[in-house]
Length: 109
Image 1 (tube, rainbow, N blue to C red):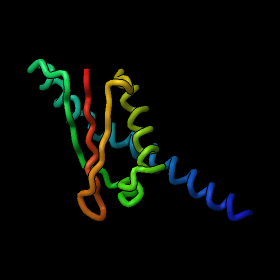
Image 2: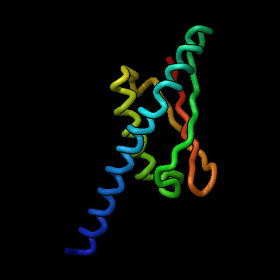
Image 3: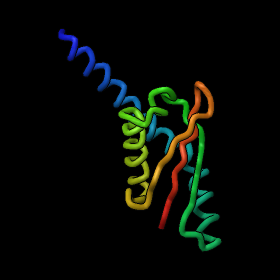
């Protein structure tokens, strides 16, 4: 096994874990997101912001590189299954502490 193969194998594993974590975050927060969207629609708001903590690889995600992009990919997949289009979404991340980040989704309809 070459050094490159070692690196890319570990990176692929980390990317796949981040995608799964993003999808799981969406599933875990589904009820709260649904409540936020329902409340906002009742008020006639076209922009809704929802934020919740995520504990998956906080050091890797806060760098907003490959791991963050993979986590967002999992979120996109999950939200697409809920009929939300990517053009209706934006994401941000902020460090809470060494083990947790706050992930924020802004929906614009």
